[in-house]
Picture 1 (spheres, rainbow, N blue to C red):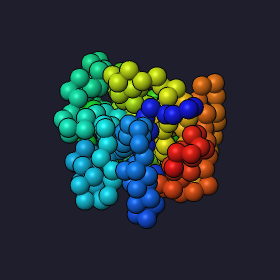
Picture 2: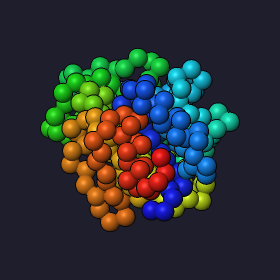
Picture 3: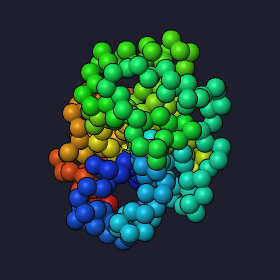
Picture 4: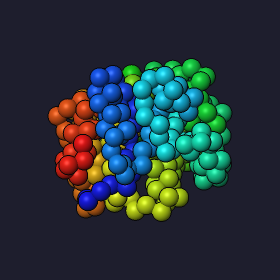
Amino acid sequence: MARPGVLISDLDGTLLGDPAALGRFAAVMASWPGRPRLVYATGRTARSVWYEVDHGGLPPPDAIITDVGTAIAGSDREPWPEWPTVRATWDVTMVRAALLDLPALALQPEVAQTPWKVSYHAPGMDRAALLRAARTLRRAGIRGRLIYSSCRDLDVLPRGVGKGPAARYVLARWGIEPGDAVTAGDTGNDRDLLRTGGVGIVVGNAHPELAALRSRAGNRIIRVTSGHADGVLEGLSLVAPGWS
Ligand code: GLC
């Protein structure tokens, strides 16, 4: 890849988590002529992302994908109202009701719930428990997908929605080929994001749940040794030497 058109990166555990490394990342972004467009893709709310931009040293992005890919906003901070484009029946009360009887699921605080995302704390779910939750949704006629992150957070989203689909939507709107995008992440909710671009950077501090992610045609997975924002910089320097 000669010069990536876009960097789409997760925040917590990737760009955020090591303030000194974030400072180095911000300095590179500020001094790099013709730098790629910058997109954050996170489980956080838009409000908390703009807070980090205003007060936490996060460089100003060209767009943000928030709430695990269920919302997108531009650099003018206006939400893109057409996203998610899924207009199938999706009713969060039905999702909550269907999953009510599953053991060990505790709803996250109200601020984490949106019309498109039902989020639980569900520590230590194994594959069987995830399959059981998926089956329960299916039996209730809900076309949802389950995203499990950090061995703790369970997000239930409509099928066709998530960080990966949202990233593809941003790229299409900007007319950028997915192969010209570099992505970065550290946990389960980054899996489909890391699959989206030409290169996916798995930072050194990534959660073991990404251990099985392997390169495939048109999508190179790079595992770097540095953590957090330093890992993103390390990945970028491997993708396009001489950049940073
Ligand atoms: C963020 C969100 C939370 C979500 C988690 C994993 O922490 O606040 O709702 O479950 O990311 O996607």
